[in-house]
Amino acid sequence: MLYLVECHSIQQLPELPKSLTALRLSSNSLTTILELSNLTNLVELSIIGTLVQEAQIKGLGRLRALRQLTLRVGKMALPPTDFSSLSQLQHLWVSCADSGSLIKLPSSLQELYIEDVQSPIDWSLFSNLENLSSLTIGGYTLEEIRFEVLGKLPKFNILGMSYCPLLETLTILPGLKEIQDLYLLQLPRLTEIQGLGELKSLRTLRMWDCNSIKSLNESDLSNLQNLKRLEICSCASLESMPGVPKSCQPTSVVARGSTETDKIDDLAKGAYGQALQNLNEMRLNYLPLFP
Image (cartoon, rainbow, N blue to C red):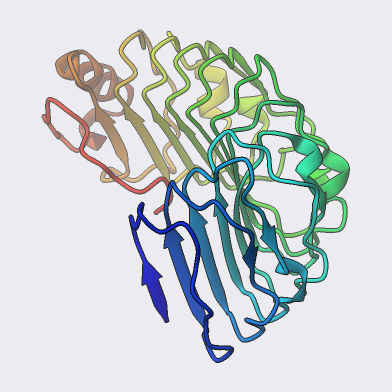
């Protein structure tokens, strides 16, 4: 294993041993071509940072032992890349400033995180992802999104949306009807979740920093008879939250506010008696997006 974290003075990598199984690199100063084709034993590869215009990553398609791959290069568009030859790849986290940078994805993929999305997603890329269970979209800069194909994937059940500054309406149906976990983080303009009440398989609903949401309809929440955990954090405009289903256990309804902690607490208490875990932090500390 070789970890080169925050090594911003590195402009090029030395020759690396073929036996290497894990490489993590974070740098903002790489200026040369990264030739990785000889590292055929890599199981984990992580490249994080801002590459200068001349820098390129070559040989990815030959790393057929990869199971985890992270390519986070900010808003710099990656060149068109075919990942389909990575037949063991299970976890992929990739910047997607240009949707044309993703040509094909491997059917082995189980978890996908795409970030810095600045153009419409090409959903045809997902049609072969029969093993995909989780998708997180971060840094989505468009005003609307429609989920296609996902409803046809047999194992897909977790959706996360994070840091989407312009998204106002989230349309659930028809593509997400069978999801079990829905995570919405920092969607400041989101005012409506269309089709929420139709998610009959939903087990977890987590909403953090969605400050334009004013209410969750009683009919929507009461229809979610499989809901086990409801977590509302720092949603300052929330005015009503009726109809929390009885399937939520008393320790599973959590409301946390920042500047309006008491207000959010009162809403949750009114919705489900003693179900609230009375957490009075003035700020929400870091928690992972997924449990």
